[in-house]
Amino acid sequence: AHQIVDTLASPSMHGRGYVMKGDSIAADYIKKEFIKFGVKPIGKEFYQRFESPINIFPNEMFLEIINNSGEKKLIPGKDYIVSAASSGLRGMYESISTLWFDSVSVSDKEKFKTLLSQNPSQKIIVVDTFSISKQYIKSKNWLSKAFGIIYLKNKLMFDISITKPTRFSVELLKNTIEKGDKIKGDIDQSYIAIGFQTQNVIGFIKGTQYPDSFVVITAHYDHLGMMGKDV
Image 1 (cartoon, one colour):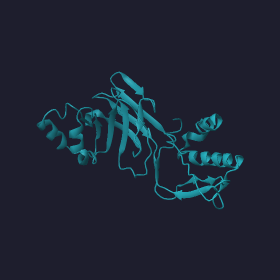
Image 2 (image 1 turned 120 degrees about the horizontal axis):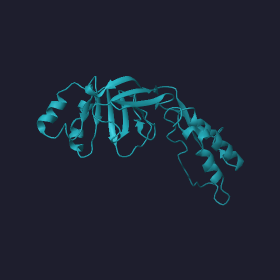
Image 3 (image 1 turned 30 degrees about the vertical axis):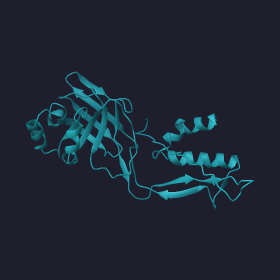
């Protein structure tokens, strides 16, 4: 059992996700283990194939903070996580044209009103929702019109999405970026709407005492996969 877990968690599986066919590599390994242990397929094969849309980040994963002190390359998976439903990013964006959605900008009704009166379509919104969750909920329609969003977080967590992205979105560890900083990024993204094929792996062991009864055991073998080429 330890060897199976070690293999499924190894780099060769590419996170068992949808970049570099990690899910298919894991499925093939599980199928071979089923055969080794005498598990039989239900029907002609072990695979139950289906298609699903998926948003992936297959290649470049570069994000850099630029300020008066110089340039700092951020480490993916450590300093930031690309949001699951994010589009890609290319170019440099100055925080002078960035709007900060934080406790200062919503500290009173007039400041909050002024913030929401601005057109966010060509701006990246830096969102610090700690202690301002009510204002954030009220502003979701306005935020949905932004070119991009940076969420400041105490903890980073990656996910997967089947939703077609509409804007760039990334999570940064809090205090990674400050007002006045610039962001330079090159994040490769691909949305596969039709034709991405994956599979469940299904088999059975026929009972001896009660062969007409079933005990069903299920588990997820796929996982979050990769964010870029190295993470």
